[in-house]
Image (cartoon, rainbow, N blue to C red; front, top):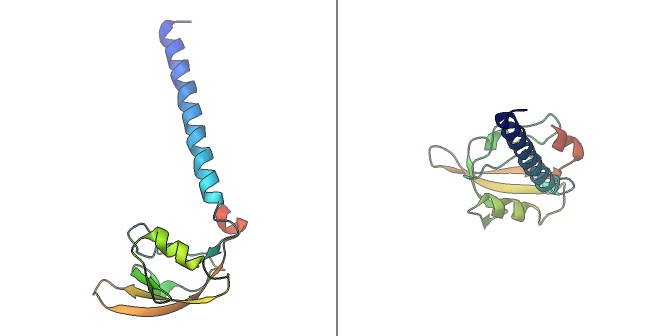
Length: 123
């Protein structure tokens, strides 16, 4: 076997180990969501509600592409603070969100939370 092939095999092996490590880390972090109270929609890092939903999730379409500025009257400034505030309430709670649209107007919308399930995770 040539020297080049040996280096290529080692590099491929190292890359595989690194990729599997990252995959394991991502899975372990994302599996933490299962069983937690979930707002029924995803909030992006910039505070904007993602336009994505599953059929059994509550209707959050009025919030799509709007920036959430408060949860139950509590001001939030990061997506981490948002999820932390939502998880203070049990699944099934009707939670009111204040959200700022592209025009700058702030509207309130109420969406019932739910438990994030294993089925949600797989999709």
